[in-house]
Length: 264
Length: 264
DNA sequence: TTTACATGGGGTACTGAGTGCCATAGCCTC
DNA sequence: GAGGCTATGGCACTCAGTACCCCATGTAAA
Image (cartoon, rainbow over all chains, first blue to last red):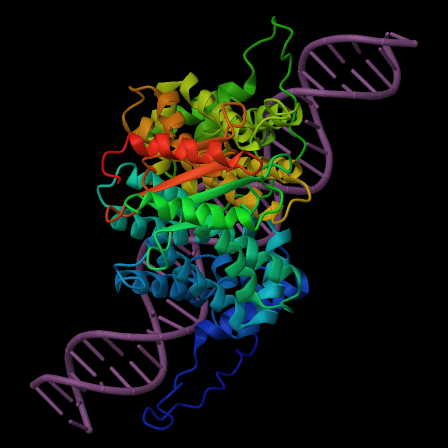
């Protein structure tokens, strides 16, 4: 009944020919068509029928590749989540290392996915910002990353007191920091250095939650304490291994204070 | 996938609200009928037509009071969010106090809303846990709380270096801690002390992110550092006001170490 | 070669959420 | 009693998402 159905231009592909990238990746065709339309008419102004019309496929096929319209906007998160899971399950960085370092490294996997396609990421960011349905969808995606990180930390913290609590709080903090860095890069139009922005943000979390680097000494003074103290009353924070000799602790403290002329 | 649709700003005013005399407020009748049915047939097994049939009103009226079916499950969050906003705008605890304390106190407002109706909260928790659509919706609700807290912190941290970053990270940490305590209470069936659970969880965040209590002294040693150190190699953390006399800092450190027989 | 089966895509019809528009019933004020 | 305001009810419609069955093609077994 419909008019001439669009030709399935795909000439039958000799299976052996160009073995790589062989069959028409319908999923990408759909995601591409969807994204174009979202840009042209907005997310809500685009129906699934519009998308499949442009892609030249049947409506039913869309839902075979994407469980919902929103999924077409984030076609790569599934893969990225799997990558993060694999990374953490393969022992994170090194199972003896700081778990916080491991989850920060895992978060960078996500960042790299964004950074791999700056223009796409920026456009999608703008789209997501103004479509409530997409914001909500994104929340559910982010939540899955967060739960993955929290699960890893929970395993690492094991039976430690409040281990599960710490795991969830740190995971939330890492995700928040990552997103802060990521978004500032996205807002800049994808111009600056994304990794640097995220590293800086994650640095704050590692400073606070990370295990103090024991290899580099048994006592360290973090001063000026970045951000601590509300402007009125700077503070210093000192972290030391519990079995460090007291003289070493005092030595470090004194030398750090020496650099602070404000101190007497 | 059921999505949370845009939030209609115009919340229709419940008729005859404060004037005591009025008949049963339709909004509550609907929420009540909806929740009963969700318990009986599940969330997805209940249609809006079912709800309005039980409530004895027209279908159109449902969507006048709830922008989506999901909203009927969380009928009081809107009010609670307004309460939190008002609390923070009225200066938090005391504008001179620690901003972290203020947002922790704000988080407790949410907790008290849950604790005010333990049975309802527990049932809703179980329902939410097993309905993906509701989990997603809840995320969007939680996110609004988080943004409210972050906004307050951002204002408090003002031009401070990385103020916005700190604000977002701390807000995320507070929300995660709050939810951890809340959920453990909900899982227990609403039996234990909800406030205690949440206080404990928030304590972790305040220890790490809070401003060291300056009223109670200019130097404090937090030992044993709760959770820090992965089991191998305990650490001590010391926080001191930058303009504290050095002798005072060393004094505090020594006295703290004296209580730790492991130290030499 | 023919048959059997697996795979991938298409079509149709249906459910149900959410919206726009209009009608109506009550109520308050001139 | 006429106007106007508000709360509600009643369609009718759009559109996402699903169930079920169809067909084409390619591959392996007979």
